[in-house]
Length: 331
Image (tube, rainbow, N blue to C red; front, side, top):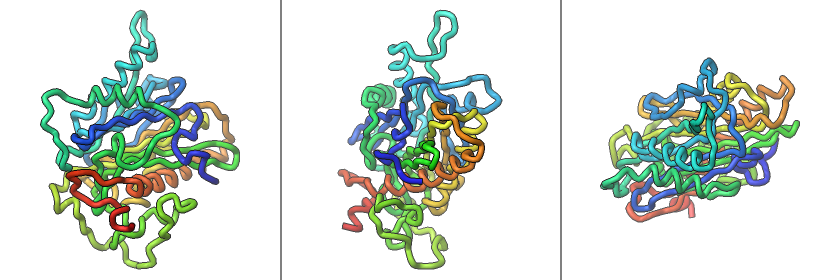
């Protein structure tokens, strides 16, 4: 396996990602779009998720395909970003057709960034407009770090952010991950130099520092984040995608496997105060042999681990930050 040409989720053909953020708000929204409706499912392992339209992604539900997926800051307010994306899709004539009605299907998930130092004194919920702006910005190339849904994200010790990575399997199947990393846990080992995801790094994509040579990692729970606010302002939300033709049930299994990536990159993971969630999607453009199916979930987990580290690695400082960036501590 090797990364795709962009090392982004958009190496899966037909996908685009758009980001919008408000720097004063210290929050934003990310949308994933495709050329055509796509098969998708979801798996939640955190104890405090916030979602919209995820029930329809269960394998036993009748919806066959959706039109977009949204990751957003803003906690419950951020779910309104989905409405902004729905507005744009409806205007474009995209959505489920029933008689004269067009109904865009846009599941979404949020992270908590309401206490991160940004100005949250809005008079009108800003996230619907951010959803529309993210839709308008959708492209194959996009920036990582302090952008979109990752704008206000924080890990235990350093700023989180928006991350992405990809892998191409030997048969040509492409797998990618997109994540807004805002976990309870740390993405760096004590000392803030080495990433927990370092054993899975490819071509120094997040600094090339290598694995921490220390033993006994994970035995302490130091957290600048918890010292700055209560322990409830968290969640890692992600999308893993492939061009392989998968059913909804197989997309869900890919999501389950991808959660291993959160566990590899974040210590601890899946806590009661996280809402860890992974969407899994298939564009259905590439038929695969049954023997490839286990590799797809494995690749998704590797991509997600690397994407989490890349989110923190590419984070940039901003006025009013509560935590330092990894780059501030390792320049």
